[in-house]
Image (cartoon, rainbow, N blue to C red):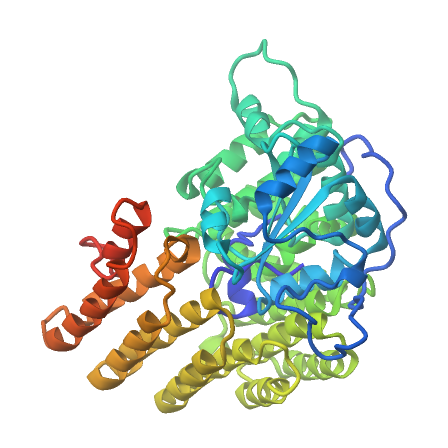
Length: 554
């Protein structure tokens, strides 16, 4: 699956979050039987009256067979408790490629639809009323996030949408079959008390497949994630080698993607990784980690331009080639694996040059994906991955052409406009980059989405045209002018977007060359905040977003 996204960025950048992403081994007991999974495809049920776009803002059709509950989330939890059913909460957005990938590869499966009858499915669209307040309540930020709750509302686990779909269904089944909350499982796994009850194979498996990338520092702080996962891998019983292997891989991914990651000659890690790469079954089960983090992990466990790095990268590349040739892998995931090959090829290469044979493979695979993918959900993910792969391979003209053609087909063309802006920036064409940024903001739909795109535009202006006071002021005031002056506005992604803009504006005015413009922008924000109840916590949040604390403007 495609990784989660927290901002309008490219598919591979999603992956770099995490998913850290994030993250089955055959070591655990067999989960409760589920309906035989149908082959993973890019097809999805689409409303008859909407061949090219979702029929509603949520993009979730009643004809998909899932009784999604939207709006009154508390009523959904009351219903779940009355029926003694768990709650499945999905937090997403219409535009985001990973969300569309989830719709095209999970929510359309008959076994998922059948299982949904045994839980209460709740959908929170990021642009719906009170969505950002709900995001703050449930501690969700990145799209998509999927959480399974007990009927009483206590959280069981966060589901890893980036893993292979069959693996996803097994994790969902374990969660519904009475698994203890992952929070409790983690505490038990890390305890030094020998008298504590032993964890089951499923307990360990739930830890290995927990969506650490959507954890939002709830269970483990980001800085402590890699060592914590390594501790779990060491503590995992020898009778469960595949689970322990996944935990170690996940630990290396967390370490390799940390801000302070530095290359090292880790022979033990390289040997273990080569063992996984050589085992087709084990490699396939860890498809997500191997697809998205090859270059990062290779660069972390080997030294630059070393023989060890060359060998590990070559073996990793072979595993990605197998994924691309696997008919059970979705089109978007095959493209992500292809992008992984490009990233590995550029590692240590002079000026990041990509071999011509690989470039031709990129051209061929992208053309095929574009030609064969007709479903609107799948295309949102496939075209994002395809354009990103072309751009990473420095095939910029082809990436532009693909994105521009998709503007006429996509239900969320503004997403692809940001891809065109990123390509223009990469070429050094600042004017074109800002033009596409402005077009993307103008076309964006939905209050949270427009805020996010507007902030993206303002920040791009500050970076690429810092001398243009009038344009920066006009854009910032446009963003602020669209804010709904209600408490629900100033939560989660909205709050963080405004804080980013405030920080960028403060840094822009570090030498007080733009005092007048910034004063007018802040005055407009003050007028919005003044409309909020003085006793509501959102009032102080609103008052602070344009005046960030010292040191938070980066």
